Image: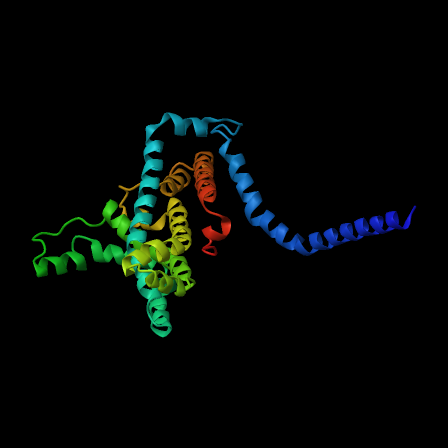
Length: 294
C-alpha cells in the first residue's frame, strides 16, 4: 500500500469518526424530535385508518368525501383564514411602516404595545371580545349613545365577530416580521431613488415595498397557517355558526368519541398545511419565508 493510499484510508477513517461524533452530539435532539413529533404524527396517521369496528378501514376518509358538510367545513376554514390574513395585512403593514419611520426609542415603545397581547391569556382576550361585542355589550351601548344606530346589532356569534377576534390575536404575528424586514432596509436606497428624481410615493413602491415583501410574506404565511388550526376564538365568538376543522375534530372526540374520524380530519388538515407551505416555498426561499432575505 502506497503512502497516498494510506493517507486516503486515514482520511476516510477520520471522516467516519467525525460523522459518528456528530451523530452522538445530535442524538438527543433527534430523539426529542422523534418523541414529540414523529411518533405522535405517525400514531395520528395510524388511527385515521381504524374504523368503528376496530379494523383497518378507509371509512373515515370515505365519509369526508361523501358528506358535503365536510367540504363546507374545509371551505369555511380556508375562507376565515384567508380573510383574517387579508385583514391583518391591511392593518398590519401600515402599522409596521409607521413604526419603522419612528425614532428607535418611540418605536420600541410601540413595539411593546404590539407585544402586550401576548402577556394575556388567549381565552381571556377572546371572552373580552365577547363582552364588548354582544348585543348588550359596550360597543353596542356606545354606538347607540352616539347615535350611530338605534337598536343593538349582532356583531358576535357570526363571521364578523370571529374575524374581529382572530385579527386582534393574529395581528402581532404579521407586524413583527414585517417590522423587522422594514428596519433592515438601508435608507440610502430611498435617498438614491430620490436623487434620481423619484417622488416619495414612487420610491416607496419601487424600492421600499419590494424590499419589505419578504417580511410581509413571512408574516402572512404564519398568520394563515396558524388560522387553519385555530379553535378557541371561532368556537367562542362564532357561536356554533362558524364551524372550522378544529371544532369538528373536537366534536368528533367529545360528542361521538370517534378518534378515527378526528384523526382523519387532522391528517387531511396537516396535509393541506404542508401543501400550502410547499406552494409558498416555490415562490420564496426559506430565508425569505422567515424574513431573513431581501
